[in-house]
Length: 408
Image: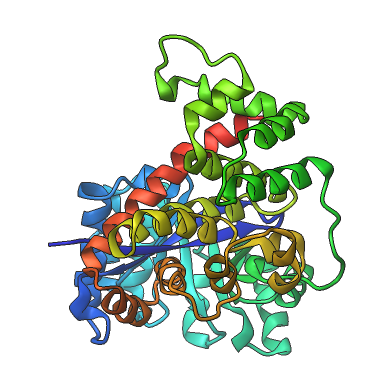
């Protein structure tokens, strides 16, 4: 049986990654039908231990996992590491002495305890003195309820996590109120407050991307541009001489490096360098998301399109959050990049043969099971195969991040 899951990032007040909520479905037949909660929890925990590499999926960060009443009482969470597991109590749980005792055991065993999807109700009062994190459905509660939540946090000392944050305005408001963590896709939305001027090194990277993307590959122009930027020259030579390639003799010149890599691998490397530069002032999860989307799009494109299109799929995924990184609309950004029509239209979410590929990558991130079903049918790929490709992409992104962060 195939294991299906998605993950949603959770950020701290500095917009840095704190952890992920892991979302589970046990096969394609469950997309439109409710499933037994105990079975879902047990399956997710089992898959995390026996199938997925939890460390790779979360890169050592906190993993937030929903536990049903029965799974809490049975201490099912104890098969997961206490140092990185956040035990979430479902909002639908019946609160009684048996449940409260089970929650106290969670704390005694060293786990972080969270109450999920909170909307103020008297029945939750007994839990507020036990939990470590309160996950509030932020847009669903009134201003007076917000004040009550803030007062409870001060009284009991738990952290506040704002769920369903979709806009920069919601994020700013929640932060002003004193929330500690944030879950949603607010960081993927462009903020139209100002247009960021790109540092010259980033402009050079984007110019280089244009050059390596041209139908006729002009090695002399590419070499000249890289040699004219000490940072790009250093990064390229360091990359080619890294242990990943296991070379018997080092690559000692920029031209040798260009010839060794070839046009398509060079294009991929340049896109990673360009995006990392643009993401320096934004949450690191932006870069991580771009890497996952790019690799997933590439692998998917190889299966459902062709080899040439898979390279363009990679670029679409890598550039899919440029609007969030530059605080500008995608429409204003794209004319400067000289991308192909298929890539440009896909980035604008307009009709393109590449659009279903990037839409599927976003559906995977969001745990949008109905969209996953629709898009896998459209692309003629089995859902299980798509999930395997996405898991591979997450592992690839984790491997790529240390290389990126090591580059000055």
